[in-house]
Length: 349
Image (tube, rainbow, N blue to C red):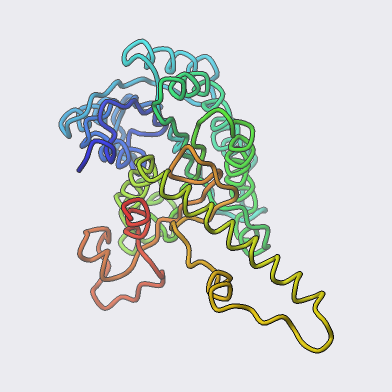
């Protein structure tokens, strides 16, 4: 793997990295030799939720990275400020912020206590905003050094259809608050050289927190590594920015030609439309897409577009070969339609 495709010597601030998806993202970065700031609450072992900031730091060091374990409740402004300052003092700055920490409550309106509602909004919305606010000055400084800074948030694409709200209104609103942070900050810091994007798995991911929810069979879920690999591909996308920028400009020119031809045809004589040359007809053909991300607006300084949602998908055969599946029987049907390799392939094209 070339240096441009790794996170070597880059510093990541990952919230909720003591276990689950956050830890998987940290370990994947550690294999590249990255510096990882483990910002999480758990400092003592818990039988129900295995993993602490200290065990996570030890695993990161064993994987080849450099770790700093910092106890941090992202609901507490002073703790977040202290964690960011401690990470900057240790590693000299922050290049990537991963907003992974999140509270979950998959219950309906009548079954959701207000204590759980307050927790989800405090962690998901306020915590994401607070961590972004604390890290952004350092991400801007990283951009000035040419560090290709990134902010990656584990949040879903905004979809206002009622089907996503009805089963768990409070949780969906809280997660969409994280999504709106991505959308707003991507535009606000559009000219600062910071890649602000989101990543969301298409299928359920087996985590310790999910295992505590009644009725959830984690054996039928994907492992956190599928998200970690997709996140790694997204954060290593800088090397593709010239190619993607050229492709976007070419696609924009094709759209302009198509509109011009359409206007020409609309105002043609009644005897018949103006014949469209074969070359122009070919140029007007919709482009199949240059990257595997749903995007809002292009930005030339990074491999990912502004406010992109990279969906970590999975295919049955690919997951079997890559070890992403937890313990799904071979005969089980995989209801998803693609795999995380599409994310990596998009950045490696």
